[in-house]
Length: 103
Image 1 (cartoon, rainbow, N blue to C red):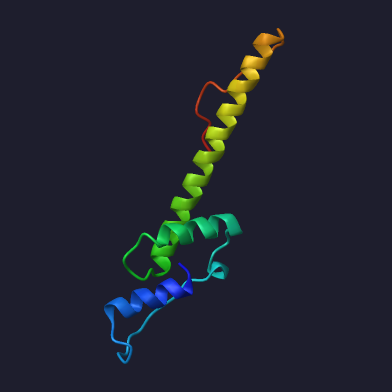
Image 2: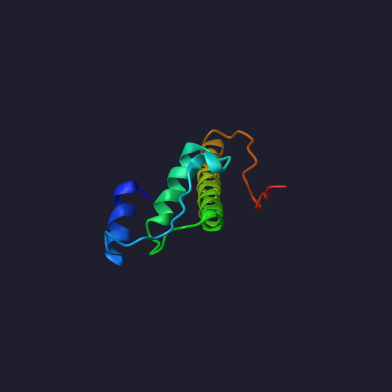
């Protein structure tokens, strides 16, 4: 979530003179790439609350899962295209035929 959005969200629920305690999460708190961090921040924008570190981990895990699924979809798509090409040019190619799980 961008700082400007966080301020607007806080202002929506609290008076500007009200005293509150908040926590924030920075990318430095987690060992993740910029892409995963940005995706997790986008996911947090759908939340109607200020996230804590535990929720940050949940959002990061969701972003990682979505990223891995996207990579898997791209790999299958490339495999299917290569299968089509190998059939067209009569070459040997073994397509991805089963789910590959991370160990």
